[in-house]
Length: 471
Length: 84
Image (cartoon, rainbow over all chains, first blue to last red; front, side, top):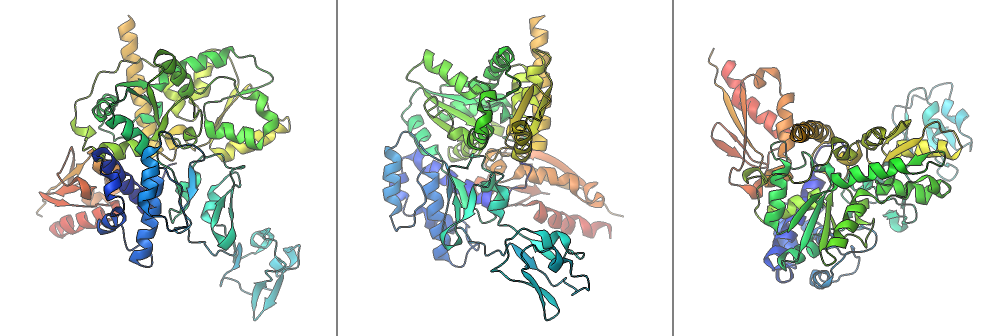
């Protein structure tokens, strides 16, 4: 998502960093109750009505940071932390609504503004199929009892005086999984949700966020377990334009990871395997978990067209698991849907954001450390899996297929609707739920335009290096 | 006319990066040409105030919790008076 960093992101990152710091130091349990006060004193304030609400919201954010669901009862934070420290794995759905942070936006779906001129034509009145609009005191008035919020009047008004507004969470959700529940709080319908994470970016109150897995990971690192990090190809540029992948890997080793592997290598293998797959009419990718969820939950009749290959993450994890059954495998990427995908194959999934918070908590400054030489040799096509169009490009090197890249859930939905109706004229559909591909994911740290440029230059220079080495 | 260069150092350390130093860096491109021509930018590894990032140093003075908006105002204040 090309977007600006908001206060919401900064608050979430501050909370994650503090929780990570205390977990690394083994003080989480002792200082948990104090943490909302500490964060408030650090400057997370002046957003809500009073300090009490501010801390109540912070308490919920801390619960999410330790991997607990938000709650409405008055459970002490310590209890949540005790459960969290006992847990090795966080299961279930990761996207959560913080009820107390939700503003319950009182938005009338259709709103007549002061721009209404009480014209003669009254296009609004004429366009309304339910006869819900009347002219009162020289202005159009909508009868809420009759209005079905179809939006015809907003389109019909010659002055654009009628607004059709939507709650930001509902608008951000392409699959209609968010609705207004009791007391108008946002509610996520798990049966429809594909865990793309767009709502976490969409809500301007930061009321939808994700459960973090930093506590179980840090616990393992503290125990000096044999932990292996699998890094997604979208890592390019995530830690700043001046930080190389070698430095990120060195940082991961400093954190306590014993081995670091690039998932892009597995992406190369998957492209090979997908190219060999029998095409039953047309094929679509399985590497984007949110897109796969979209097909499974909203277009179940098209399931047979989804590639049977594992995602590069699951593929590499199963390979690592075979070699080392006791390893603690952590995938690191930009994705929230990955947190729910293949829960048996990987032990934890971190976003780049969570990882950066862990670096800061451990006082590891990537910009200042010496990078290690890269040992994996993915092709530029494997690295390209991170960007929209990358999977098609990789497949194109193996055989002559007509493919189409679907950039973002909205495009995916339209294309799948057409496919359902049989109106499809390609052999391969590349669906990516985030605009820009993985580089635009909700767990990224930089704008996808910048990271795309860095990914392209990096993969070109690595390609050149490999070529000159093989000569 | 007296021209004094503005020497802008932006911290690109991980703590500042997490709080948005990349955006500060990108915003230099968007500066008004009059100011931009006077600014020399340099990336730094750490300015020693990691809990108050993003940090920048302008002509030797450190400013904390920088945002692109604050930076434009600041640079205009510092650079603006000189060529009036």
